Length: 289
Image (cartoon, rainbow, N blue to C red):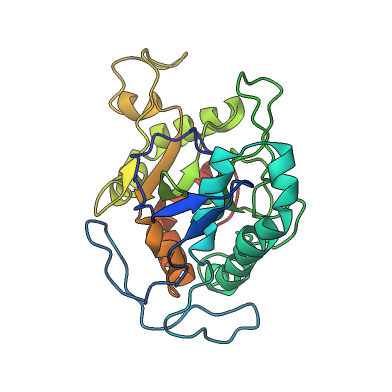
């Protein structure tokens, strides 16, 4: 399955609960109890914050209750097996209660924390034009005609940039992989040219931003041109970076992290960690951060 952002990600298999499906395709799980909060997820880089994530009203949630419940992954798993309009329409209420509304709650929880990092990045809890990406797939130019995305994609974009390719933050949740991303994925020709000029003119600042975002659990997307881009010498000291197609850093995380009460705080901590990259990229295309 290709993520909403076609970034190369390591597949993280979520432990699946024993279940059996009825004739509607809905699973009966042995337990729907939310796991207790913890500051550690074995095998994954983590951030531990003592304060609980705020709700939409700005109050703290209970210590053991996350914004998302395990129903999120249950719904996505069942949608993978029943990716058709008839099943989705029969389960639309589940989608709204178990996926869309918790996603809006997460966006509202992130909003005040994100504002402390940048007044220019947005967290919009609207059905149209908001941070939550549409569940409907664009199948016009795809051989895969399944109508629905089987992941949750949330993007926090710059208020002056409505293009998905502009610098921003991204949260990806699915049964196969969960990751956080920051930067600019597959920028258009003008933005790509601007990034290359900025790297050429300010190589020290670029190296500092880049290196911050490819250590301690971070990895830079590595998709590059095979040859030097037009008008750039193959002998340029920064040619490896000038050949990049995307300027993004990615951090994989355990799917259970999305069920923890501190998830919104962890997301914004990651936004803060990747600030040097975002400052560089936004500045390259004339945007404040």
